Length: 124
Image (cartoon, rainbow, N blue to C red; front, side, top):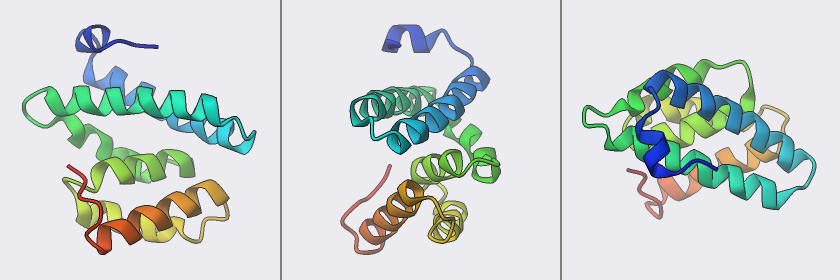
């Protein structure tokens, strides 16, 4: 587990690299029905995104290239994290994921789009 203090010392590129690893690890944990592990990884991903957001000139922009990453889990997690500042780029990715054939990403994309469109979730 990484702490907030440790994350402050990590480069943006390394945070994005770890975000990518986490998304894939979380996908695998969900495929194995290991919810505890998936939740732990989700918490770590949230800490990374909070750190990127705290870096002044919105370093979350570094997540945008992940919308085209070859693994659907990375695309899904990145789209959810980019929805608050780049919905015009994140929404088409989430819509595509609705037909990707992976239950976890289909569910995640569907849930995020529904809440966002109904105004019940306002990502920042």
